[in-house]
Amino acid sequence: MWIDSHCHLDASEFSGKSLALADEAARMGVSAIVIPAVHRSNFSVVAELARQRADCFFALGIHPMYVATSHEDDLQFLRAEIARLLNDPDLGQALVAVGEIGLDYFVPALCESPLKEKQEFFYSEQLKIARDFDLPALLHVRKSQDKILKYLRRIPVRGGIAHAFNGSTQQARHFIDLGFKLGFGGAMTFTRALQIRRLASDLPLSSIVLETDAPDIAPRWCHPGVNTPGELVQIGYELASLRGLDQLETARQTTVNVLAALPRMQAGFVLR
Ligand SMILES: [Zn+2]
Image: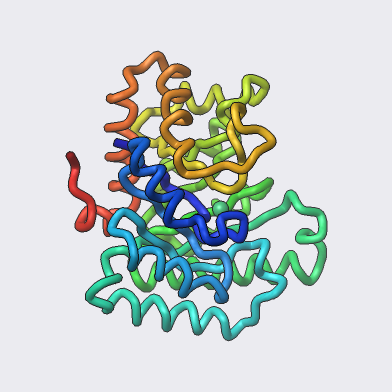
């Protein structure tokens, strides 16, 4: 029993196949999938997937790579949608976080003014939304660890997940101290990814969650193919072997960690 804590199941690569891929993942042992939104235009799509499947959960937010095509009033829309959906009797428990939000300083075009400042504005305003609704945050952190941490200290939220974590041990510790779990996925499966593999094997297991980030970050064995949520199990085996742990114990502990990071999932998720 595993949880894919970060999967873009609504991505265009999966067009028409999202539900079939969720079925396939469930058959392989993935008992829940968390689907973050990226832009106002897909808020209703990710919510609809969660409405159709009891094992799908969702988050609403504006991804840093979609800030360029977003407007300030999308933040008011985000706030209003969260307020509305948290009170929806069918969907309230499936809305588990604000995300995917963060800062991307890897893509050069996103680091130039005025987009750089716009990214920071959207990130900090969305942290305030997470804080105001007492929701965790799903963070996209690319070459931006210290800036992300600086805002988290200024606008404290109730933890969450720093997804596809790729920072130093010290930065990892800062996230953990602020109540965050660290997401590991396909990148960890490459033997040359020394730093990520070191973190995945040395950090306390209690701070690690697993993710596919499908359709992105394909693991070694599907590279350069399209990643799917069913790969989560094999990614979990990789973590188990890196740490010299039993597979079942790895599944159990990483599942407990996701439920701790995203406590609203607990109501909709029965530990079997
Ligand atoms: Zn993502």
